[in-house]
Image 1 (spheres, rainbow, N blue to C red):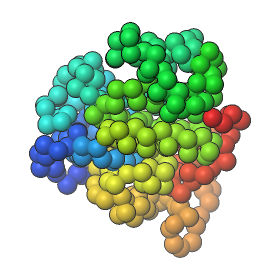
Image 2: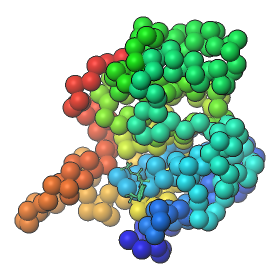
Image 3: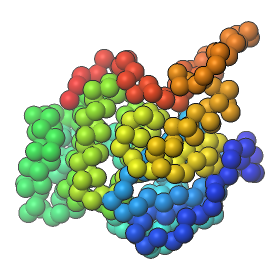
Length: 300
Ligand code: ATP
């Protein structure tokens, strides 16, 4: 796809500068080489608040997360952290400004034990002397990590690995945590534990940008939501209005959820290639936060 205006609805405009915002994203465009992934994206995350960033596969959620944490430069627009313009700053400076990014996937060292993973981060963040009390605090918050302190990160279950990622963040609560699809591929009960972890992080005063495909999960936690479609903001507003916006986007795409009225769309007559089939199966998971797990993963 070439660069150009996105097919989806445009954002309604940048929010007024709000000094109480942990994050302000204003009119961001971003691209991967010639492929333009974000179009004029604007939204804000209030200090200590929770905003859900929703959208289907490829809508641009992870790209927003990467731009916010400085992993991908924006082609246009501004990023403010706590009112300070951090546009174009490298990831380490954005991290220093108080942004922690738990990326899609695990974000831990597979060959190090749980304790080594935590120690590495805590030493850097709070200094050698504070490592022991920080480990105690992490194990108190997530007892399963204490039980498995000698286990290598790579052999933990997916849910335990996400908790390890969150434990690294808890010791020095950031101003803003960007949590990118932490529920991906997890059993519902494990997702519960991960979301409890997110609540715990939020209770320390950290603002959360929760990137999710499991709409219902994210909306339980968030007060506000941003719905992306084709790299543009299709909705920004209170969580209780977000589900209707999601339904509208899906209806416009000709997709159907259990919440939509009317007859089901006709079955396709042409054979569906495996890639398209896989994409359809990974459709936006509205109301499917309680999908049966498929990976045989152990629970935390
Ligand atoms: P998912 O839920 O599948 O992760 P997403 O909403 O997070 O989707 P992004 O990963 O942000 O979507 O991708 C937005 C668009 O940018 C997609 O069309 C994707 O194919 C494209 N894209 C993402 N990463 C790259 C990359 N490294 N190089 C080129 N294109 C990319």
